[in-house]
Image 1 (tube, helix red, strand yellow):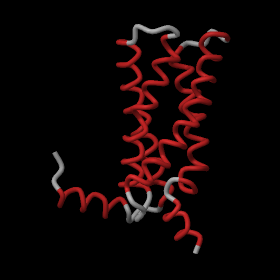
Image 2: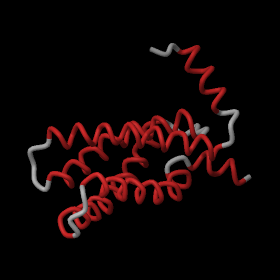
Image 3: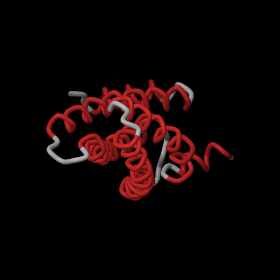
Length: 147
């Protein structure tokens, strides 16, 4: 377990890096954690279509995790936590709808393996989020970087 002093030291160390490497680090670590969560959900999921419902459940689990990782490690954001989490849910939920439809198309119609569809969907979600996350969720950080 990381105590507050270690947490602050790690956060200070990471915030000495430019924002882009922090963003990449958080995206990759979140993606790896997301793959593990997806595999567990997929294994336990009794619903059909299995891959698509597993994708949807795992991406909804990912929202608070990714929000916390980005807030803590990527962006220096002073907006209230719950306000930014609410905006994160709006953004991620919109992306979840689009990528769930994409997942369904890839797995059910194009007959791609569910893990390949996961990679395509996570890459699509990451690309969309890359352009919108800072502007709409962490807008305090976005405003300060433009000044």
